[in-house]
Each structure stands twice: as C-alpha cells, then as structure tokens.
Image (cartoon, rainbow, N blue to C red; front, side):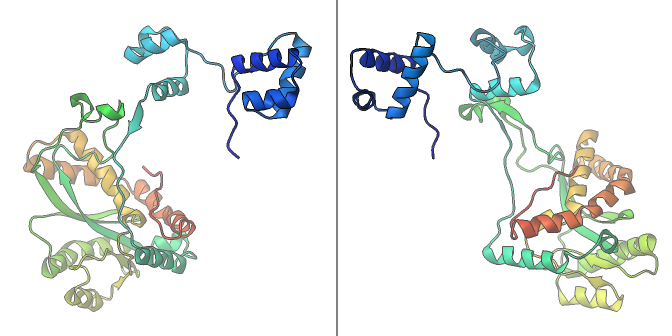
Length: 328
C-alpha cells in the first residue's frame, strides 16, 4: 500500500468546523475526501487539546535553516552551521545535485549469463589454496593523462553536466601503450610493452619470453593453471599447441567477464600509480609503467587472489550478472 499523504492544517480545521456545525462524520469525510476513521481521530485530538494539532515532523530534526541552505550552496565555510557530512550531502541533494560517475559494464547476453553461472558453479568448491595455483594474465592499454580509471567526480545539476567546470577533458588521439602482464598470489610476474598488434605468433612470443620465466620464478617446477581471456589470438590452435608442448594447463574462461579476473583490479591500481607520475611522452609513460609495476607488492596481489571465492559466490547469487566488488 502506498503511504498516505499528511493532511494539511487547513483540512483539519475544516473537519472540526463541519463537525461543530452538527454534520455527521460520514458527511464530513465525504466532503473533505478522507476516511471516517481519520475524521474521528482528528475530532478526538481536538477535544483532548482544545485545538487542531499539527502533526509532528518525522525523521531527524533539520540542523540548518533555509537561509543557511542558501549560504551553503555558495560556500559551506561561511554558513556557520555545525553539521556532519551526511547533512551536507542531504542539503546538496535537496538542491538538485547528484554525485555522478559514468557507469560502465560489459554487455551480457542470456547465453553469457548462463556460461558465467555454470563456470562459477563448477569452481565454487575451490579454496583459496586452489586459486593460489592460478597465474592470471591480460593485456591493457594505458594512456597519457587518462591513467586514472577511477574517474573524476563532480557535484552538478542535470542541466549542468556539460558545463566547462563539470567536464573531464580528453584528447582525441592520446598517446598510449599496450602492455601485457601476469600475476598470481606470489605477486606480479613479468610485464612487457607490446609495440604491435597482437596475433597468434606475437602472443606465443610473449608467452615464451615473459610467461615461462614468470612461472619458473614464482612456482618453480610446481604445477600451475594459466588463465587468459577468449581473445581470438589467445585461442588460436598454435597457441594451444605451444601451451601443450610446455605442459601448461589452460583454464577455460567465460566471455565478457573482466569482473572475475583479479588482474583487472591490478590494472586499476597500476593506472592510478602511473597517472600520479604525470608522464608527458611515450618514453616517460613506459618508464612510469615499469616503475609502478615493480612497486606493486605481493600482499596486494595475494588479497586479490583471496577474493576469488567471494567473486564466484557473487556471480552465483546474481545468476550470472556482472558483479561489483569493493576492492582497491
């Protein structure tokens, strides 16, 4: 049932006046458009207090006046109001402001959702120790001046989203570098800048030059499971043959599932670190990427691996829908 609207003071006074004139509660209810029980309650309270009682305002008491709200709109420091952060946010929302960020998520078909759900159910019994045997890999592009994927937040009205002060400036063709990297519970593995488009042969060269050394460094002769996504160059027959010859077990991976790959969180962190170094050219960008990559500690990588059971539970609960984990 929808909540009833609070009756105005004028309506209550009219009800009392009509009843004092000798009208029945039924007639009064019909006249003002309310129930007979509401008329009876108002009349009872009138006899108890000798006046029409105004309903008490529900919720927390307002800590700022209307005048202060107008001052807060321009400069909170000049308002002189002793308020908490929540009150500030509430007042901004009342003024029509919203904390905005563009939402992005992969597009999932019903088939994608079923595949993701099936994949998660097949591995829901895996422990953290099982996931610690997996080495995750991926490619990512890092742009100069656009390394902070966390986004820029602004307070603005809907009509102000394209105002100059509310925009995040971009360039049409920003300088960027494509990189390949891998990680596991042991920390970051090898990382390399890729200077050409990636086909099957280029990918095999990357695996041979950077994945194999990473596996030897982090796992020695122990068995591991290698994860990569479903890019066409990753699933080429020659790539499968290369991995088979080196006795590397490859993990199947559901399409459009970056939210399941912990290395995506590592890319987010890496881009923030690179962004803070403010590179201005490709050479500086390459240096900033390599320095930042080696600054990522093993504890952070381990925390990402430990999140895998949580990711699977979330996917199963969401029936295959894209999940959002609050990880740093």
